Image (cartoon, rainbow, N blue to C red; front, side, top):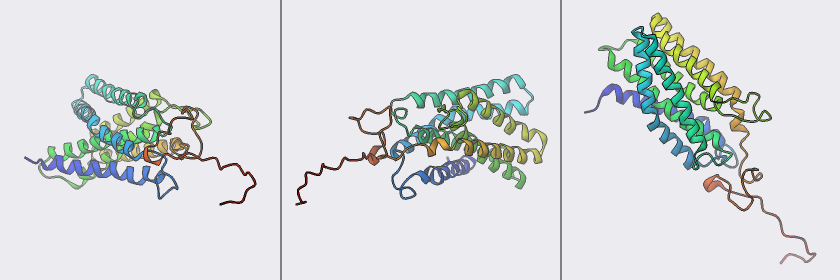
Amino acid sequence: MVVASLTIGGVVGVLLSGAFLWWEVGRFASPQVPVTRFDERKVLAAYTVGLFAGVPFAVAYVLLLASMANGALPGALLFLVALVAGTELAQVFVTRSQYWGAGVALPFYLVSFRAGIGGILALTAVAAYLGGVAHPQAAGTAAALLSAVALVAVEVAGALLSRREPRPIASRTGGPLAGGIFGGVAFFLLGLGPLTGAAGAIAAPLVVTAGAVLAYRGRRVLLEAVPAPGTGTPPSTPADRPLPYGRTDARPTTPPADDGRPPA
């Protein structure tokens, strides 16, 4: 049996997270740039894994909202820690995995992975509202949709905030602690907003989205700093091994020496 609230939530979650990949990650793929800066197959794999990984985090998010609505602060803090710490641990796993973590294009895969998690959280926000009311109201629907946008924004911004990079690349080094604090504050505000009424339910995701956009823009240099294949061999990649870009691999070739003879 098809549940309408889950179907609508799924459509919203996939559209939001997919639109982010199409617009933002796609800006670093051909034909927007001469050579794609990442392996497209790994981006899709990271996004798909993120969708599955987002299911337990969605459960933690629902329990967080329920605990806050019931005034159970210890339970709310427990589920908040589980949500934030679990997400950071999942990103550490992706970072250290052999499939995604071996190349310089890793920031693209982390963003794609967290976009998948954000899509599932967005599904949860919309489905929880539609499934909890008999007749959806305009204000409640708007708050659910804005929360869905905020959840995707928090996840993709957190992906870059949790990534450590040397200072020549990023002005702030970042790390799991920075990403965890950002995510914890964002999720707490999203849970607190509805407790203050309809205005708070709309204002909270707007504030969270604005903060996520600013954080993402400040760390977007991590994506821009990824070199295109053929512009040089990354220091971590031996010269006799292919670059980790999949089908877009390319290396500059050395022209043959001029021996003085005319070309054939």
